[in-house]
Length: 266
Image 1: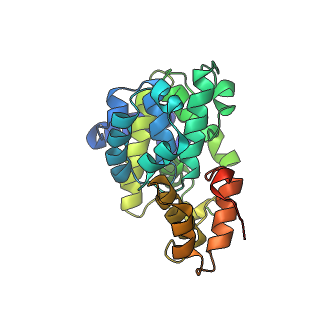
Image 2: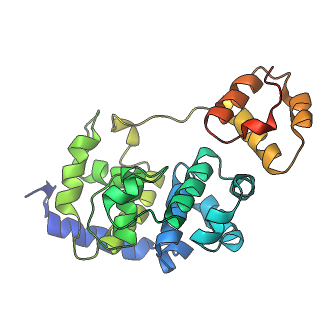
């Protein structure tokens, strides 16, 4: 049996649960944890803060209230609705996943979910717990924070391979949805307090500066295309920037720009 200081893992569960009740954050996708709501929110939450996602989620759902409406939409519509969240590749993945599901792709098992575009182990695990209440250990930033603070204090270079068995052994299998929500909310508070430092993880990567980056140029191109600006105007405005060609070509390769938009890739 694993121990945290002088706690058994049952006592650890009770402690995390108590913190979860104290810190619970109401969110639309928690109040209605349908498959569609959770899929959309989880892709939005990849590398984007909850405060921003709360606003964008509500707007997105107004425009695309169901899997069917999202699947039937054109990609530029989806990209326009995604503006403000960043990492536009996620919007394309979500759109592709909706189209596959609308055509009959299965979504009931972890293996089914992992076959969808943009869905990795963390997103698949979240869906299994939040939607289906199937106990499925997974790891993301807030979960790492809790477990680093309680089980790996003073360690460095901790791998997810080490962490995942601890998550599996200590999780509350009776109510996985509530358990992982509690971990998320508790982990958010620990991060704000500077505890459970993520740099102790071997998987920690500090995000590069956005201003002046290739990501910034990619986002600007996508924003203009999604808003319906003529490609010639975009080229005229941006081509003097040394980042433009690399950003344009990367967006083409990622499927975020239709090749038909370009008659000449100079």
